Image 1: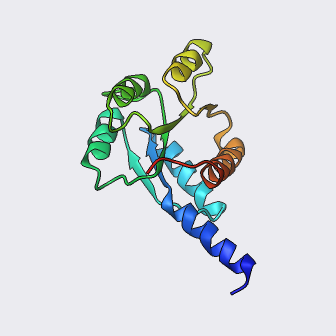
Image 2: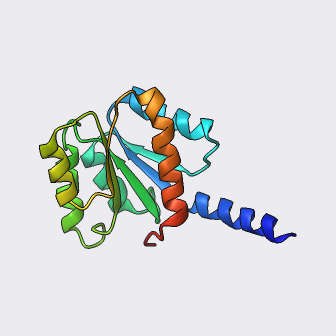
Length: 151
């Protein structure tokens, strides 16, 4: 096996090691994320929760969402919104190091400020989901290839 083949094999393994945890109540947006991943041939596993309550249950069960993972979090959800979810996650020693990207329709500076106070890795606005989503997924794919995530 050549060095290039070995590097590609290691790169593909690293891609598969990172799980994408999508916390999104909107089925259309969730399908758009899944479709973009498939279109870009990104094979990372995706697990979805429909709100913050379900997401916390899944994270605490530990058998559903494995490490390392990146959370893509909507803000406006029923039962427990994204800010309430981040509040709990950041106070829980077992979850506090979670890597969270906010993916929302809100362009409010107040929401952006509140999200960054909760140490999000990025705040992404869902404008023109079809056009911009591919770029978002490409960025996330590069992110978990380059950044060392906690296990």
